[in-house]
Image (cartoon, helix red, strand yellow):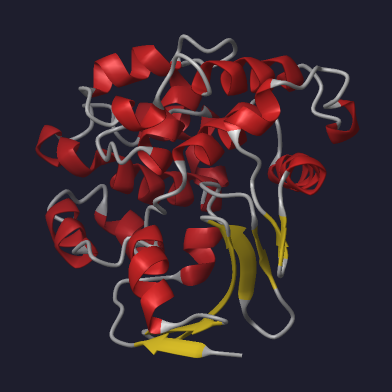
Length: 270
């Protein structure tokens, strides 16, 4: 098995990054690693201090896929320095500053967050796992995420084994639109409001699913998804509003807030 190691990665927390609710195909293993399929490839990865060890990975694959996927070229330390000027945010970066925004495939991000609606993480993972096993391609280590084109010709009955409930019709509408009239890569070139409206043409895609897709799949780092935890945090901690000088990286800081809100749910509730 080929192994590639990269050192001096800071700030970075592999566990928080892969288990904070932005991606659903990664699992912790008994030997302290994480494994999953992304970008059509299986990866097993471990963190040791400020080093990342990529198993079954060559230098070329790391540079062409995983460097970008884990957003290793971005200066998160600078973002945290800027954010820490706000005393409300500093405790959040101390707790979750190792989170990075994964650069996921746009279609996978869209479909995954459609599935995430009114759902919990174990069930989301189960539906996505069955979707990939049923309609993705078998590769060493798992299954790829099925393309929009692959799903576009299916019916609600075809998706019944997923046990996705009302979301099945949303998945199919998204697949049909993304394989015909809605080009996700072209959306990247739009302003955020236009991009959000384009995504919301899909049945069942509201502002939250759209913003998750914009942030985690399309590189709009100003996108700021709002769920119940975020709404509570904003109402209680950010009564005077989010600092506008951080709007360009608001989506990154949103993850610090989200992690803090979930971890400290008692104080958020009070």
